[in-house]
Length: 336
Image (cartoon, rainbow, N blue to C red; front, top):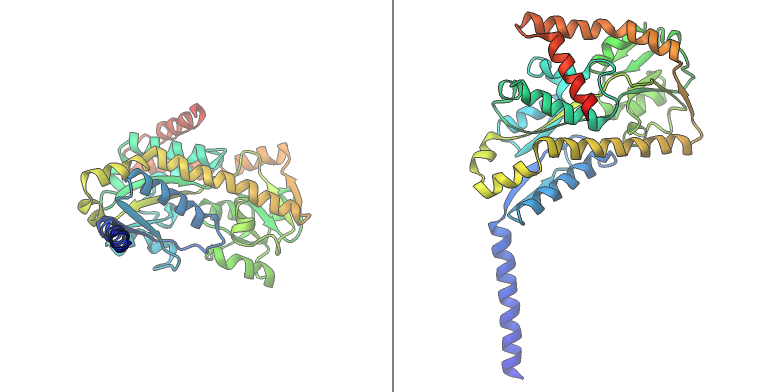
């Protein structure tokens, strides 16, 4: 019996030592996150991190951080400077760095997050822009949210209803709001709920997922859908060059496996799935959902065309074929 006890104790000690050894051997990566836990992106990052851990055979352990280390427009620098291993944010918050990528955000360019994200990666890589714009980090993925719609406390049914409304918006949404005669208001997404509740905002421009992600269900009762969407916002996921350099060949292979087009599709599909949850929340509250009529949608397309023309002109001025590049992006989207 004494020998059996010693044997069991020995086995337990060996198991503990093995666990400690495995834990010490694994490389730990920290992923910065600036959105609240209630937003689906926290779970989405965790799902992507799980795929990375699995691809590495446990050689990589990933922590998705819960407290923001910088504002959304400071996330790229967190990765660039090695403050964190991986960071993500909105490409439009970096207009100088990602101006070429803003072709993806031209109005009515993509119908879903998945189409926008996958097409963005293919297009951005194909034309060499990735190497030019993100050479100071290791770009892992480009993903998108579904096209925007408008959420308000009072009915929005036609374009004329937008006149003088204060609308929380960003990116090309600022230009669209001005074209519609509205007053664009920029603020962090998480502050939208309180501003709508206080009445300092009349409406917000977000995808459906934000009804849950930013708790809009209780402060809005009307939702105006635009057939074909307005535009899909594009995000980046990137790694610190210091982190990439220190990884082993097998660890780099694991990162590559869940990055690129695969990672862009994986994360974008999560955003599309979140659309359904947001729409369901609005319906559960008995909110009114209106679809902009065909004539009004055609009118809107003409009104926002200058945004697309401006991107083409900027690309031409930079020595690129703006019209050809945009046509190629549309072709990639159509082929998906």
